[in-house]
Length: 357
Image 1 (cartoon, helix red, strand yellow):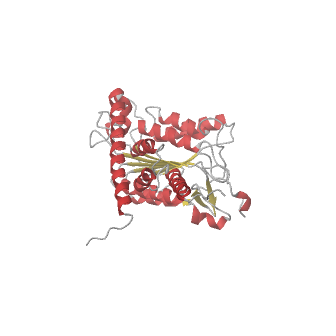
Image 2 (spheres, one colour; image 1 turned 90 degrees about the vertical axis):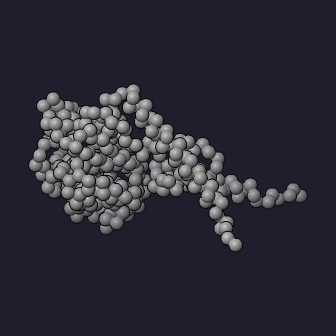
Image 3 (cartoon, one colour; image 1 turned 135 degrees about the vertical axis):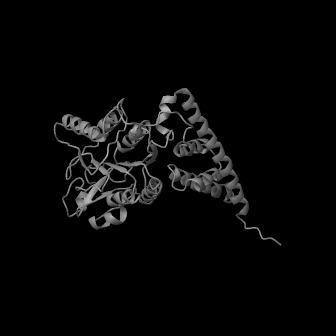
């Protein structure tokens, strides 16, 4: 005789909901992509697969952290989204992640590195808090509880780890952009007075770009974007510029607008040419794909569609289905809270009421 676990029925219902909701979200995401593709083919060139084997594949991981418990930042999320959009228009397949914990950052970097092994051009962009400790640079995840300087290595993500992951892929060209030179939010409890990020050497075939010079601090910005990313996005969209000229333009503009207080800095060991947006004289092998192909599935968009379909649900199993599909998703914390609220409501409803005397 088969023995049925008491949670078997609930698990089956959750899996059934997961399958149904995932299918609906994927269909909606595909329809959105197809609609945008049909309405504006030129816009979709940036997210299409290369039309010919002579055109290099372009992959980007874009992270924006701003929701810190200590010293939150307003602009990194906007900066990440603006940069991701500009990169998509330049032919990059972009993984865009917002407000990541340490575990989520490490997982995103690991997946990115694995995809780079297939070759092509890799680009890593990070906006958020960053700091140097004993000459090493660290990117700060959200939900950190750093009390002392010796805790940074355990709770943050080493910038060297990003470089090592990209270098091990042995692809032709890598680009690392760090808009992470804000004030150290934990400086009061640190012995060191080091500001900004430390100088880093670029591995072979790599360009490192910093929002400001080593040891200096960049402002978060008073507008929708930080000063550095504002000019970076504008330069990325300018056709016919070699990569070195893109960052030279950014440096000149940021230095001008900050009255010399912020001077972006790069370190490069590139040997070949690269264009984000090719001009009329760009070699064919360095061009962005020019033949529309089927849109690439946007997993972030699918997750958002999934969430939108359940966010007003009163059934906790919808949120359990979301967490099973996206355990580290953008709305994971909200989903967990909704499940807890549902449990509390159920407990209150099932409690025996006291009879009135």
